[in-house]
Structure formats: structure tokens, C-alpha cells
Length: 421
Ligand code: AMP
Ligand code: GLY
Image (cartoon, rainbow, N blue to C red; front, side):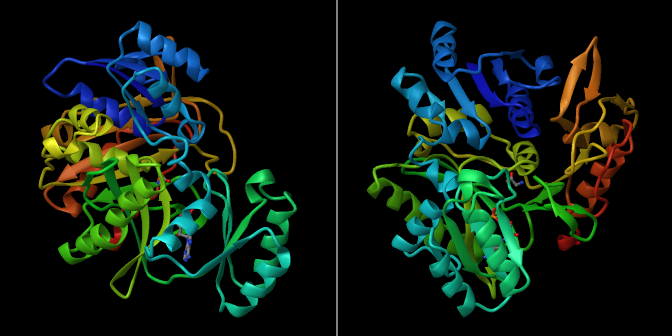
């Protein structure tokens, strides 16, 4: 197939890598891609979605896969479908499940899907009144996309009210904070679950755990994610079943009733409280770095799964996973997540050890290619992935691979998967 992938991160690289490893020969295109995807296919520079759809038609692209949320919320799927192109991802309307936390919370409430008690409003009086009824900590969220920064866990009522005021005034998040959610704090452990959906049917992937804080022991500010592992032993069959029955099924049925059938990846942020799964949030795309550890666990065809999902035929296929575990350790630039860093050349040692060569790989993200030199350009630069028959084995291999990658200012967390060990 000719496949176009939208995005430039490790997530998109890992999808492309999995597709490149399939028996069938595929031709890959990236918009915009990164310095390493150029080794797997052709990087494009077509920012306008109408022009991109034109390119896809002219070049007979069989399937387009959308990685990040922004093009989805902007309606790229609607534009491609209007051009009779096959694209995997939710419509602009369905992408509201991530694009607007107010839409998501009201949807969850309407269809009785478990979530934290909340109020959504643009009235400071109403929000303050609800805040006074809650115990601390109190969770305050801006409605719109804020690049992962729109959630404040306030330790006092005063701090919560300050966050509310700053959001409503537009001071902290501009228009994204015009509406605010105040909700109860849920105390439990967090999971990421991913369902690949075609509007009616879905495939639930092995549950993963992300590490959002920048520092060891979950300290420091939030990031996009510093590492992940799957499957997590924190989920048993009973919990999977609860997530299927209480969250995924009613979501797919509900979205159909809303005339916005959900096609694409439903990323469910779950807090498990006393054994019960509660929905923290939805995203409408794969997590990054979760995608980087889930792709290598799939033993059936990744491209076929996306193609069947994009053509409403998921029911026809069986998606299979290996019995192994995967651990991904993010290697970030010096100043991540505070600011940009000076570009630095990446040197990857040759792997002479068969065990490491066969059971690890690198997914590239914040990199560029300059005169055949791979450069770290900042942010999250790459993910070292290790596979193994236990989480411990996979983790040890991932960290051995990390030791073989060098660039000035490289930064990793040293405790990925600690909750499972
Ligand atoms: P969100 O963007 O909604 O996933 O929120 C970002 C992070 O804030 C989540 O990954 C959780 O760690 C935390 N969080 C969000 N909502 C709650 C809540 N109601 N109770 C506890 N933690 C929360
Ligand atoms: N790793 C979490 C996210 O992609 O939002």
C-alpha cells in the first residue's frame, strides 16, 4: 500500500517502523515527518489540508494515518473523506472528545460513563460555589487544548480559585480557558488504555502505564511522557472487562447516537479507585510514548488493522499480540520540558551483543538530518525500547540500549516501570 502518516514524533516513527517491518512492501510518506522518518519513506512539506488531500489523490495514497490531535481537531479527516480518500482518525466532531473537556465531561455524564464529579461553567460564582463544596486537593481544568498543561491540581481552595480566575480571564490559556471544569480529585493509580475503533467495533490493546513527570520518583513538572511500559500487571481480566462494558461500549454507542461515530484511537486515561475504573479523560489518538511500546508488541499486520478500521471492517480481522513485555525510555534534551536546547549530534554505538540487537530498537522523535548526521533538535528526542519475557528483562534491555546513545545534554528517567517491579 501507499501510506501517508501525519505527524513528526516518536509515535509516528513507531507506526512507520512497524509497517516497514511487515512482509508486504509499502511505500511511506510523512507530513511532515522528522530526520529519521526520511530513512523510512519520503517527508513532505504540505501544511494546507486541502493541498495535502490533493497530493493524496494524485499519488493514489491508499491509507492516511493521523498521529497527533491537532489535525484531527482541525478536521483533516472530514477534508480527506470529502475527497473520497481512506483515512484513519476521528471526524472533527468526534475529535471534540479531546478538543473540548466540557464536551467530553457532558458526554460521559449523559451516557452514565464513570468519571469524577464535576461542574463546567464560564461563571466564576458557580465555579467558586462548587469549589467550596469539595475537599482538597481540587482539580481545575481548562476546556480547550493546552498542550497537556491545562490541568491544575490545587492543594487549597484559594489556589483552586486563583487557577479558575486566571483561566477565565484568559491569562493562563487564552481562549482554551473561556470555560472551566472543576472536579473532585481521584486517588488511585493511573492507566492508559487504547481502543482502535471503526465506529462500531473496536480492538482493545494491552494496557500501558506512562510516566508524566520529568523526574525520578514522579517529581518535577509534567511532560508529554518520559517512558512507558505494557502490558501492565496492574490490570487483570476483570478490570479489562469493566473498561469494555462501562467505558468503551457505551462510548461507541453514545457517539453513534450523537451522529459522530467514533473512528480512530480512543485513548482512555483511567484512574483505578478501589478496583473500579474511572474515566479521567479521552484523547482521540495514540499516546506518545505509549504507541512506541505497543506497536512492537503487535504480531499481526499493523497496516491492515488501520486499513480495516478506516473502512469499517475491524470485525473481519483478528489482531494478535506477542506474549512479551515492552519498556520504552524517553531520552530528552537538556532543557525539556522548560525550554529549547542547542542542537547536538546523536552518536549511536554499534550493537555487538545479539541479545540487545535483537530485543531493542530506537524510535526517533525530535531529530533532524544534517549532512547525514542525525541531530537532536530538542524536546523528546528518541525512545529506547526493550522487549523481554518479563518487565524486568525488557527494562534492563531498554536501559542497556540507552547507554549506547550519546548526545550532549541527554536526559532520561532511571525508574521507568517502577510501579510494576
Ligand atoms: P488530563 O489532561 O485530564 O489527563 O489530566 C492530566 C493529569 O492530571 C492526569 O494524567 C492525572 O494525573 C491528573 N488528573 C486529572 N484529573 C484528575 C482527577 N480528577 N483526579 C486526580 N488526578 C487527575
Ligand atoms: N503520553 C501521554 C500522551 O500522549 O498524552
